[in-house]
Length: 429
Image (cartoon, rainbow, N blue to C red; front, side, top):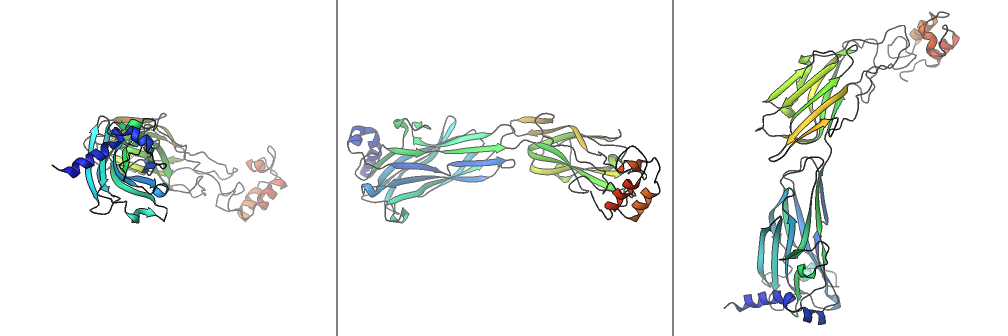
């Protein structure tokens, strides 16, 4: 007969068998189980395979009684349907080696909850390892087990994963800490069960940002782009970006632009390596002036794409028209505009299509392409100089657009010349 094992089991059962005695001999200090970190939060996307630890801390202040914890038996519970799982665990038993008996050290499942179960008792008159106490007060606050978890999947917008790491016993855990029958079992060295136990549960949250599609241009940052008279045949590259993308396997968009000022064709559209071939479906159209349509889908068996911000398509445009000499330089709205778009995402169980307008964000048009460096740069050569003064002076007294520099309508007068002269050397607005 293993009397030591029987005695240990009897000791751990005392909190249930000796409730009246506990009330009479209740210590005046509390024992607390703490989950640390108390709040574990992740912001996706791209968190699959991320590892994170959860520690269970045991706290007690034995300075009021001189009696410490002698045995404990508890469970850690968590939701098993929120995209993460336990990889392994490491015990940090607070008694010195050879001074404790490990009764239970296991994991298991109960419905939608997984659990870790640990039961330990000291041997003889063992006390908690003094090296784990803080200072001379006898305050003990150290991890007794580290649970290492692994993120297996993440939600699609707008869903999120949320779970509780709860401390309790074999009956479960009480998130509101009002049911004493679900508290961990703890006893002192005087075989007195401790019932004034405090619990500090932990939480887990995994969120993802709203998916987004946007164009980004290479010429001039930020917009608008300053141009000169020689800007014809200048190549501008526009990248289409996807942001906050989880499990993407297809996307599409319609991009519009002003065909009077710039042009492109199908040869100027490039799929970037982020969506490498093969493709199950690919369609590109640039035959309608001012409109590009694009759709792409990867085969279902190929890996999906996850990224916080990734460029997926490159489009080159060539400028074909600039400001006309002889008129006052003006801003031209040459914006690239996405009129519709979609992104398709999936995992093993879910397929989602984000669309614009809808759940896919598009943050706005891509600026003004053509803007003079100065309204007084009448020759569009990038600087206000004697050539601009000569241009306005040659039209003195005439009914000419230059009259609108100051006070339209009318003829070009001294005020228009002064307007240009005051901006002599001006490189920009």
